Image (cartoon, rainbow, N blue to C red; front, top):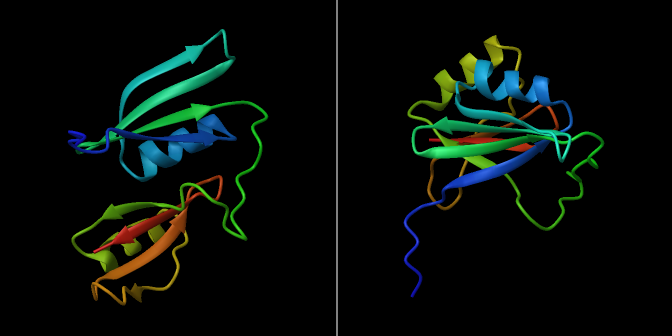
Length: 127
């Protein structure tokens, strides 16, 4: 049996490094752990933290776009737990981030909605 404790990090490739850095740090509130320019790869690697979750944000020039519709196999979305979905939606909307209407999960009866990062990666709020 594997002795996994938790998910350590999620890696995201951004088409516009500065725009995505601003989004995750200044708009969503992640803190910067490390930021490195990797000369040998001509890209940036930014390690971000939110509570016990980390995101590795890579700025890789000329990377292909992620298919959203139809949804491709692989990572579907990243979900963030919030205490009050209405408050979180209001805060996102005040920052100019559009959100979808609130839905109810058929299995948990909890509220959830989606919004997107600058590259269209689906991000979920879940209560």
